[in-house]
Amino acid sequence: MSKAAILIPGRLHPHAESRIREAFEVVSIARPDAMLLDEPDRERIRGIAVASGIRAQSVDGEFLGAFPKLEIVASFGVGYDHLDAARAASLGIMVSNTPDVLSEEVADTAVALLINTVRELPMAEAWLRQGKWHSVGSYPLTKGTLRGRSVGIFGMGRIGLAIAKRLEAFGLPISYHNRRKVDGVDYGYHESLVELARAVDTLISIAPGGTSTEKAVNAEVLRALGPSGVLINVGRGTTVDEDALIAALADGTIMSAGLDVFANEPDVPEALIEARNASLLPHVASASMHTRTAMADLVADNLLAWFRTGRALTPVRETAHITGP
Image 1: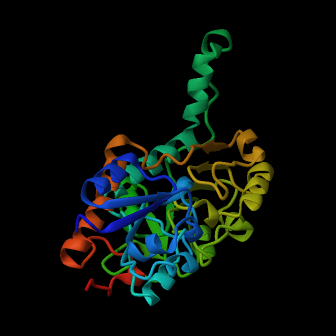
Image 2: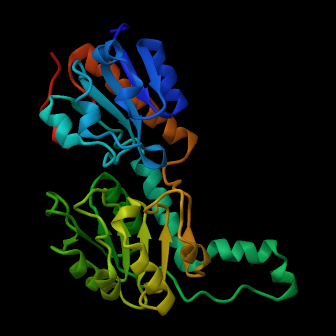
């Protein structure tokens, strides 16, 4: 196992890289480009460790196919739309991600972002820090509140369930939209995202990225959400049509939005930055040292488990059937 060569293309969490270096031979390149390696190096690579999110670089089928002995790709993060899992499956390559260990942190952030958005807490803090409480008076009463709201969750997976559990404690009714109804979940299910938006006034998106969800939260969905509507996105920035959202915030189609993710990170549209009714975070939902370290450990543990047992701890859906030699 110690002689297995693991490729790290680009940057990876330093704790993950440190643990991988302890157990494996590591080959590093600047980006996922097989031409940066000579043929002997390509032939000895048995695993790849990659990052998702803002650090992600596309790991396509051509890149995966350049390594004849490749067995596993261990990805840092829950979302894995940056790599071609379907192609990996066709090549018999395991793909793992890091679910569960970040669910509670992201759910905490989603609820905090919702409260920030409806109660304008960042702006209220700025009011105090700028001396306006003293010079002008109390911060204006907020139009928004959680009282009387109903919540729709787009993406009722592990994180969606954790968010729903928290919001139930606030006394808010929950419903959701997924590709299909989730067994054992009693929340109201809506077969379309528009139908869900029409039934609620608070939409929280935790849906994965990819072509099937690209710009799923579009102008029609925002109109259905309505003028008291609030959109929260802690999933993938690509699931929201940012042009439609900017227009909806500007003309009152919805009341406000809270965003932790964006379509072209770290580039954020200036119109969103300038929007007073938008609360924005720089993709920090899982960004505590505790949680990111746990994610890094899971990347390393997936590689260790694979080369010890022929099974990954947290395989993605497309490759769950694959086992090692």
